[in-house]
Amino acid sequence: MAKYQVRYASTLFKAMDKLDRGTQKVIARWINQHLVDVDFPKAPGKYLTGNLSGYVRFRVGSYRIIAQIDDKDFVILNVHVAKRSDVYRFRKKD
Image (cartoon, rainbow, N blue to C red; front, top):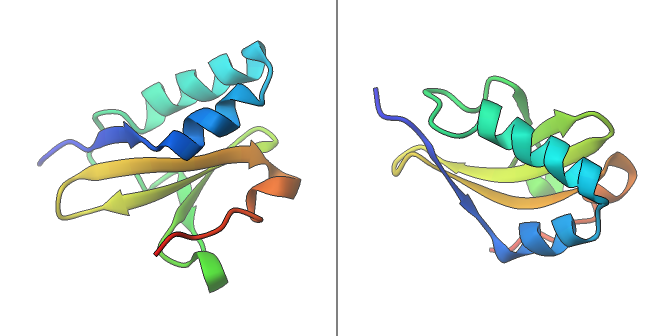
């Protein structure tokens, strides 16, 4: 089975810059352990509904990672990361 690759969107880097260094390290370590070169990346995540349908949410403590998963090309595009109270204000790009 093909392994999924992770690509980082510019929005992820902008969001990560707003976080403290310790939180950045925790999130980066979680992405490397759970999303890089995995067979099935949706297992620890949850499909979102409503205006964010088509995205998958991954929980890392009180933070959330919003990602798109392309099953045809085996690519995970990390789109946004923020605290739970702010992350769902992310605007979906069509």
